[in-house]
Length: 234
Length: 234
DNA sequence: AGATTATGCGTATGAGATACGCTAATTAGC
DNA sequence: GCTAATTAGCGTATCTCATACGCATAATCT
Image (cartoon, rainbow over all chains, first blue to last red; front, side, top):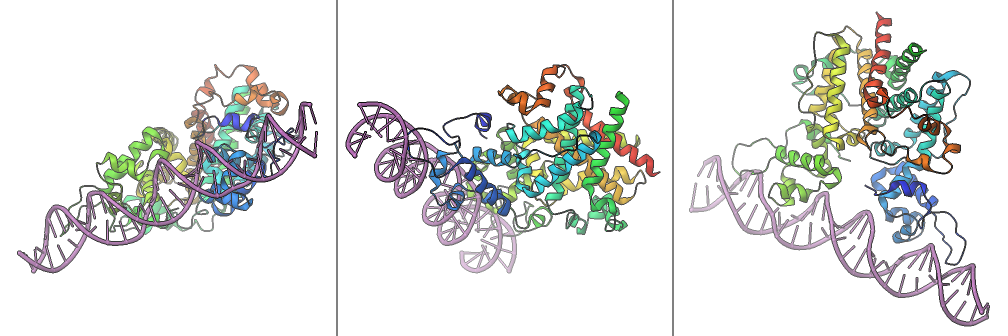
């Protein structure tokens, strides 16, 4: 995708939205406003409806004007992604790592629920931006503050973050199960997918408290696993 | 995206690749060959290089010919995704759920490493196809065979699957860390990202056995957490 | 052989990203 | 103030794609 997204996200440059001193026509647009409108479109209609033209229309300008503020579409998307994380998470400091990571996880979840298109972007090859760096740093701090080794802390964050990203997938898709199991209607289903079939036939799924929030269930399991490891280390 | 991807993946229809009986010009192309070539391009160059024209060229045919076999590009992509999972996993049956899920997880990992573009697709809103259903069924069987309740089994599979999907993200991106931490070079890094900075400064990261394979580290934690839960249930 | 039925695919259309270059609006220097 | 320098706004042209339409082609059926 974008050649040097890193520079884009971190450096100053000709395309920076920063207000300028000196000669030249003043800019009515700004990188911030462009990114904000693009995010608004994506939130409302999905990333596939974000086009340079659509974004420009919202800003009452021509499509080509945007290129004075962002190098191109790919870079705009990278900026959109990081823009969803400009607000750092709020974590309890004094209640131990588990409470802090639960808070962190729930805030990440909320973030991706607000911007479902962003989850797919997280799965790209992307340079980390200032926003994402802040979230990462906050999570690392939780474990480092606990006195854990650097490598264990990083691995723990990656484990929790990994779980979250993956667990949100089905959730942001067709809710939890509207027709995820539609394939069981197929004639050969009982034969080819006996376990899924048995599961659906069991019938206990509808009322299950666990399935009402699989995200939390899995999160607690992951944290249990980490807790066990951490306790063993001490 | 695709309107009724379900029918596409499961039903017979005018676009089915199946060989036909009766009058009419015989088809030189087939859905299978088209999907296979598309997957080959994506594996080699990324999903963004898969275009109807490119695929057609590889098959020595015109772009429009493909539309006799697949309804459109979105549907082709859905078929590509499910095609990566046509081979069901091979799991040990007699060594308990943990060994089976480790095998399952590693095979999922191998699958996404072979087709990195597929991971991003997993994050779409998509109907489950015959291939993916097979993998899901296999994993469900692991827990059901253990005598676990239906809802617990499903939640457990979702937890492991969630972890895998998320954990593979950084791995399929810029390897583990070539410049994930490049942002620490920034002037304000020590101030804004003190924990990440401390982590990098600690220096123990390079030689860490844990970080050499964060995927396995996290996987073991998730399984530990599940094990604890399962044991408590009995 | 002629009717029937599918497939192959050239051409046309329309959307989208973006290079180029001109115009407009400022400020800096005099 | 005037002029030069500098930068933003953006119309137009181009290129890449997906894909609708319709005709030619090549089988089978009677």
